Image 1 (cartoon, rainbow, N blue to C red):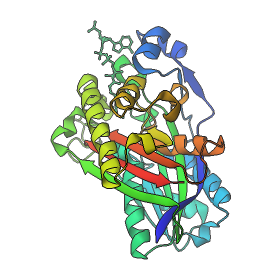
Image 2: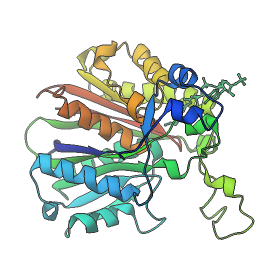
Image 3: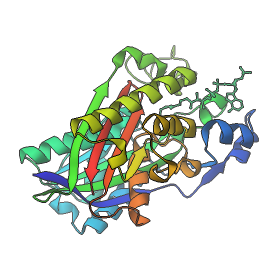
Length: 325
Ligand code: UT7
């Protein structure tokens, strides 16, 4: 059995915040943000919008494309580091909203690699025969854990969700292989210090500034390039192919310079690299499924195409997925 992607969907907040908007509140400029990151604007949730809001909308679109009803789902896996609540899982909230009564639902915490981790878990369940119809979602509202006074981080992140429906299939189209990795020795280069058991929200001694993302940008940048190259190469090596066999490379959308560096290392021309971060910024676990959905709806994915997804995030976590469309 192979896991075939039968539907994709995405959902973004309606509100956008441009670089010029940010330059009115922090010491930055459109020129700096564009040249150092490639980002022009990001979508930001408003009051009353949560991670599950966008997860449910993206899921409905993916289910509609796949032509299957929520009651048919066996499993829902949702990648996020900005869940609606510490518990229950946001996947359980999505299950309830969709009416996916018989599905098992859980979240995966792998930061920006959340969707690739979810793909890998789903692939194992489908190959083993345990589940046949699976909904995967990457969803974040990072704007709620970003310090909007910190120009080092607030320019980077955005909100949104992407989803994919996977179905067990006997044909040759679907997930060829997934390759996931972790490097916990660098956990403190990119993390959210407050609100967990170390610095609990209920403790008056906890510094409110600790609720925001802490990131050593330069270090993360260097690790991201090396790790994403390693993950991509693992997929190529495991399948005895080279980057010249790839139709489209869909990397995590964190920084245009990271994407360009990896593309250069993999010898991929820009026409085979999908980039949409200028419009969304870094949406963490949502970035790859949003990009996959856009490529799909733009008609860029043809039957038989070979796609390589590649992610890196806090943890560090990283991984890749090779897909025969
Ligand atoms: O999903 C994975 C998670 N995160 C990432 O992948 C992020 C990886 N890192 C990056 O994308 C980049 O490191 C950043 C975009 C965060 C920063 O870019 P950089 O080219 O590494 O800049 P830098 O941190 O080395 O800062 C260079 C200068 C500094 O000024 P001085 O010390 O040279 O005077 C910063 O203070 O740019 C300054 N700076 C800014 N200036 C204007 C930093 N942020 C800004 C800003 N606007 N927003």
